[in-house]
Image (cartoon, rainbow, N blue to C red; front, top):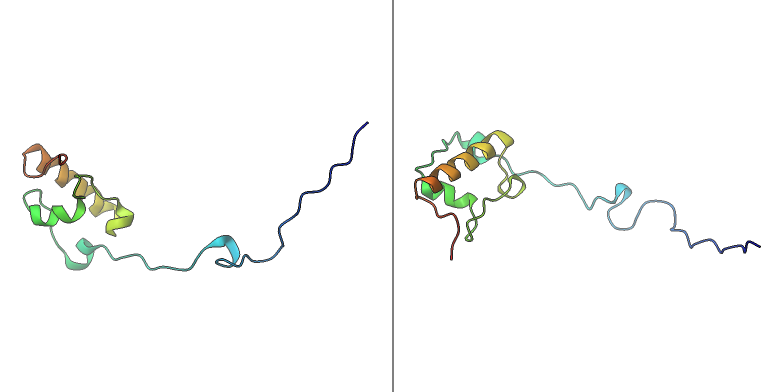
Amino acid sequence: MYSARPKPASRPSGPRREGGPGGRRGQFRRKPCRFCANKEEIDFKNIGLLRNFVTERGKILPRRVTGNCARHQRSVIRAVKRARAVALLPYATS
């Protein structure tokens, strides 16, 4: 009635060749937050500073790209939105 199915080929046990145990490729150091390190102030009128955190298409860059800490990333986002509201920064480019 029931036919015996062949067992699927199993992967070799032990650490993976690519990256060792857990599959991580290697350790990396996070960039330090530039606002914590340099004690810079975030202001929506400082367009030169805010342009570093916005792509050329107008998107706000995420924290993992900019290297900001969570507290300062929230402040940057708030400043970018305020600068957009008073027409200092564009919402998007055409």
